[in-house]
Structure formats: structure tokens, C-alpha cells
Length: 218
Image 1 (cartoon, rainbow, N blue to C red):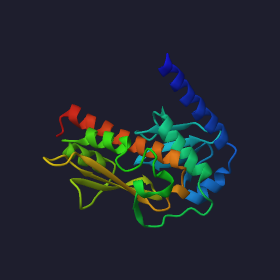
Image 2: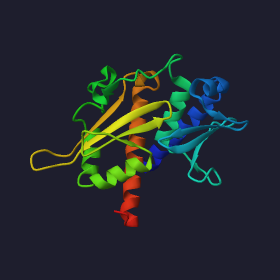
Image 3: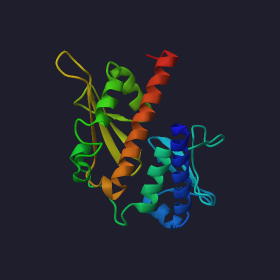
């Protein structure tokens, strides 16, 4: 019973944000972020997957086949897209300087704090699966980096990147995960939305890892 109420609340919030989206200047969004825009939809890649926003209803959908078929975006993805397009700072731009997401002043003591449950749970999910994690990141066109058992630069959006570094567990230390973001990332989205975005990224990675395992690729 509680689960149904929570899902209903999420759907209501997503619907409310679709209405808010329609109040904003869509042509300005196109210019600001270099979006592909037609009469009916705005298109935006999010972690190498194509999303589009209906310009008349505000609904966000995604597709893997050029929108011959489309699925409604989940809460985390939709809310991230809405926040970036509607609520980012007027002059937002990347600083081209990496910072540990835990070090952002606005998130100290929050869920993204160092050693918080967010990173512990993700690291535990990746433990012993470094090869599958690397495969997943590369499937998202991630660029392999040094330092870490699996380290990749990923395009959160075409205009905003992030770095994921993972160290697997050994005899002395548990598995650990580090996420680096652009120093100006909170000019693009609120802190709460950063949680949505990273939850979406880690969820997509785990889905890809599961698919690799099911298909016996590794």
C-alpha cells in the first residue's frame, strides 16, 4: 500500500514538472544547450541515450531505435532533464575543473557525503565485477582513464561530463567508488537533482552489467 502511494507521488511530481516545463522559453533552451529541435519535440542525449521532450505536453520519453518505439522516462531521468533545461543558471558554463562530488559545499553532510550510504551501496554492487563495469561504461561511449580498477569519463549530457573511478575490494580495503564532477555542476542543477542524475547513471550502469551477465558476453 505504501509503495503504491510513493509511486503515485513520483508520477504526480513528474506530471507537475511537465506543466512547469511548458511555461519556459523553449527556443531559449535550444540556443542555450544546442538542442535538436523540431516542431513537436526537443532532443537531448543523456548518458548516451536519446531523450526527447514533447513541446506540447512536456512529457519526456527515451528510445533505443530512433523513436520508432518510445518509453516514458523514469522519475530520476525526467526530473534531471527538467531541472537542467528550466532551472539552470542563465550563464551556466563548465569550469573544466574536476572536483570530488563529496567536496561540494552544498552537499557536505548530505547523502553524497564521503562514506555515505550512496557510495557504499554502489561500490558494493560493483565489487568483484570490474570487467562488467568497464564494459558498461564503454557501452556508454565512456573514455577510459588511468587511476582505478575501472575509471571512465562519461557524458552526462553533451555539455556536461563526469568521471567515475572504482577500486575493487582487496584483503585490506572494501570496494570504493569516487565520482568527480565539473566544479560548476550546481549551476546546471540543484543538489537534489544531482542525486537524481547520479542515481540514474548508476542504475543504467547496473542494468547494462546485468544484461552483459545474462547474455554471457563476459
